[in-house]
Image (cartoon, rainbow, N blue to C red):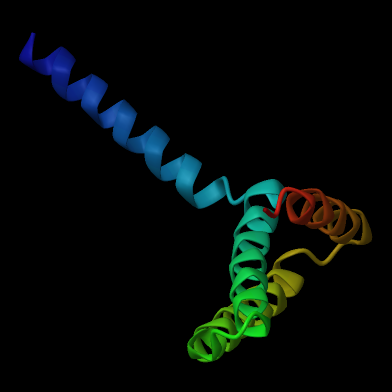
Length: 97
């Protein structure tokens, strides 16, 4: 019984590692960028409403989004992957509330 539990634990661990390392799907990467951009946009909207204290945080989030986008440009080199990423990003930005 103990061997079976150890074996199942090892399989679960391996699946977790493979999923987290190899996963990095285009959709999840696009979602990360969109979340940063949406947060920055919301903060800028607050700033235009008179709350100037959020400008620094908004700028920081925008910079993070740009850095992540550049990193992902290196990750997705084929034209088809770039197109899929752009489409996924547009879709996620459409969910920005």
